[in-house]
Length: 450
Image (cartoon, rainbow, N blue to C red; front, side):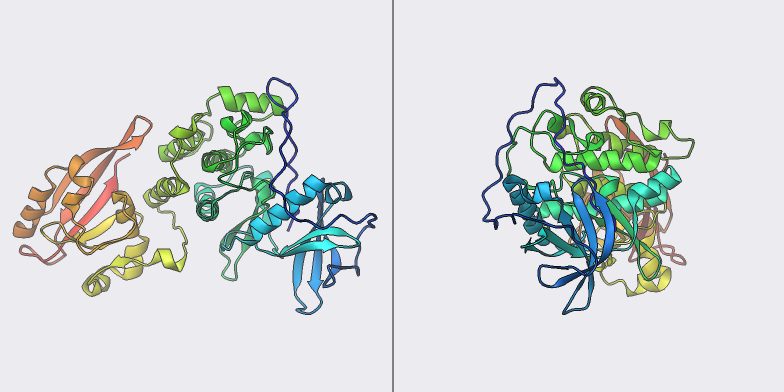
């Protein structure tokens, strides 16, 4: 595990005037800093319970050490700030605020904070789960850019983590490759961990007049000194997705130049920069997430995830999800499972469903429900009650025709894909194999036509 990247410095404003005075964070009772500190080394004990085994990494803000709990005999990572940060009253309050906020979060894709305190000799410390892996920044440096599949897989996991953070009333404020660690599970699957909540803030916080963060990932409104928000986290996710696909963030150079570009320059579509078959949907996701006006971005990370899942489904990219989210939403599906296989049905990259002749959905895979904009399958959900009827007005008539005659009907329609773009979709209505008419079920498949 590498230490969090030091992007916490206050950035210059675009007019190069001095930034306004930063207001103090809400007062937290923090023990006084020790008058003297000495450098921590192997064998030293911190907090009366953590013995140092060695150093994992070092940065401008301090060091990350490998330690072992003397009672649990378990290894952890311990963050130890430099003396000048650990002895400054404002910085000490910020450190405690970060520790308390991060330790309250519990998600598989977030690095766990297990302890924090103030040692009389070594000062402030924060203890994290020990993770062995590769920083995303390092992977990008070695591989230049990632494949569509790898980029989408990493973004799905990061977005799930950020959605959870937002659900807890917190914004991360510093989403970037340096703060993302890639680890391998026992079955060799890639697992993503979001690190470093040093810039995290409650969503209710007002601006303190400062601009903190990494220039390449700062939303325009933050450059104008607005507080970090859900929208600014989404902007950083859009920049990150661009970087994974292209190999570098869209704006680079001196800090002041990068900040100006965020304010004034449009981000070029990733598909125009790489010699590949990147689908235009990736361009749309990036464009919407990085809109200059925060009101034009995805309204939430859930909306970002919806479009990202659609991108994955249309390209056969399998997304591993938590068991609570990954079950197939099936009702009376024993016969269906026997014919198509529950697992194949669940993982199918195209939307699939089976409905009654009146349009009541009896079984639907995840892709189909996402296509309808639904999260769950209810007892009485009928296709004529969904947005599908608006673009396919012949739906009710065609369902009855297929049910009574057994014939297969194919139809095409156009749907909005956002940002004044549209996509052609083909829908196929058919009866189960071997049945000609009077079928109790009608099978539906949707296929994008580009």
